[in-house]
Amino acid sequence: RADDPVPRFREVRCVTGEADGPRWVGTTAVLVSWTPDAGEGTRFTGDRRGRGNDNSPAANDIHDGRVAGDTLWIATFGGGLNRMVRHPETGKARFTAYNTDNGFPADIILTLEQDARGVLWMSSENEIIRFDPRTEQSEVYTPHTPGYEEDINFSEGASLLDRQGNLVFGHNAGACRFLPSAVRKSSFSPRIMFTQLLLFNREVTPLSLIPL
Image (cartoon, rainbow, N blue to C red; front, top):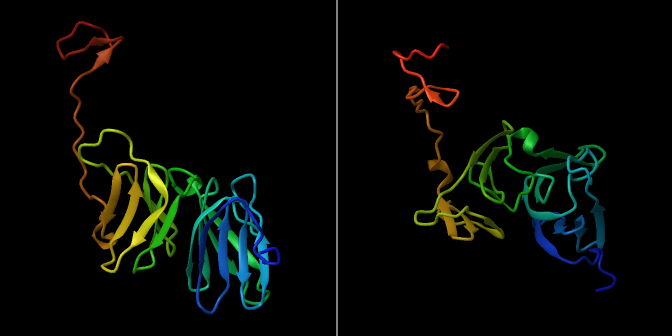
């Protein structure tokens, strides 16, 4: 409607929030905080540089969002993952951006989920990202689908946390499903062996007369 506090944009990508709090509306042009009962809305315009600042998201195009307690997490196109909290006294919104500077493979985040332990899982265009808000450490995983030789491209808005705690991310070859608690980093350290030495494109052996 014309009198809605949520402005009209080309596309609304996501809506999130809690029962006793504001609704957060992610659009292709701005992030909106909307309180339906009060009929009030606040717009947060992103930083066009893609790195954000304390007062705004790192990008205008919001793909996904999750509310966890007093924290809003948003996935952006070009600005990575953003965290928003409000100052306890002033209520002013404060933003922090996590992107390739923090080990992410890309600044484009397509979907966002949170597991039972509070860990965030995201899909970029080709990878799945694990981010622990407590340590601010990230890990990157590249899924492979047997029998599919092309690169996997994850889809926008195609993710799910099911009742058993499994995460599902949709992509162009189907879907990737896994239990977050079962994902472990490998502690295996492979042996490094030299099998061949080339000098000016010629093989050098222990008995070779080629001077080094």
